[in-house]
Amino acid sequence: MRTVSVALASRSYADEGMVQMLMAIPGIYNAYIDGGRVVLEIDEAAIQPAEAVRRVMDLGYEVVLPHYVFSVGRGDPWRIKELVEGDPPPYVVAATFDVDTRLAYVAALPDVGPEDAGRYLAERGLRAELVDSYRKPIRLSFG
Image (tube, rainbow, N blue to C red; front, side, top):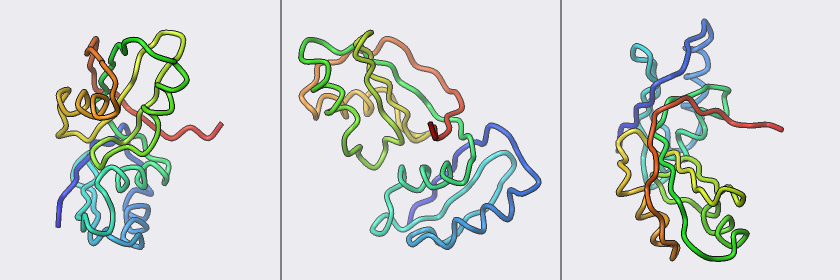
């Protein structure tokens, strides 16, 4: 059992009802609002932490997560994009690669630091250097 807590960008009158929907997802055993955060108690054997956060975002929430920006070295930019965006580990909520600027953007769980985000890229055979980090809201894009 693991507890995952993410800050919400804003609150709504429907928060309590929406959070109850999360408990219908296999692997999420408890979900509640604590101040400005959604707290999830999950079974990691059934659902990965980053997937649980993505499910919160599926309900329309904007969550505040750490973002890490890496400059990626040489290689075919389209192949790099495939590597960065495919099958993220349990601690990466979202990742993308901009082929024009050659920057990789990694949004991770709140307790994940830049070293872990960089290791995610290194495990894919990419040489990356951290150029920026910040915390900001992220939401799903439906377009």
